[in-house]
Structures are given as C-alpha cells and as structure tokens.
Image (cartoon, rainbow, N blue to C red):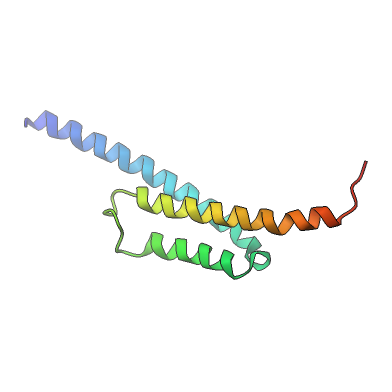
Length: 101
C-alpha cells in the first residue's frame, strides 16, 4: 500500500477513535449525574454504577483500548439498569401521592 493510502487509513482510524471516545465521555458524564440518585436506588444501582466505572477504567477489555465500543456498551447498559431502577422506585411514589387537577 502506498504512503497516501496509509495516511487515509490512519485518518479514518483516528476519526473513529475520536468519535467513540467522545461517546464514551458523554456516557460517563451521564452516569456521574445519576450517581446523585444512588441512595434511593439501593444495592443494585450501586453495583451497576461502580461496576460500569471499574470496567471502563480497567486496563483489560474485551476489545483493545483504542476501540471504546465495549466500554460504551457497558456504560449504556448501566444507564439502562439505573433508569429502570429509578422508574420502579418513582412509580409507587407517584401512585401514593394525590393527583392534582
């Protein structure tokens, strides 16, 4: 392959790496925002939160570190679990509170 071909491949890999890194950073930020609610989510919420963070920063991954897709998947799954737990906890509270009309 020519030098120009390798440059194109390098640029494409760099762009994909930057996009996935930005996505992972956004997911980590959302995950930290949900940390405020861990007290009301119980043990399951804490395990999902801290487990996702440990996996994200742990040096051994399913995919090599320049590819953050596995990290993004774990963070997205943790957010889904935390959101589900939060909805379960808030639904009974909404049913108990009197409705305003």
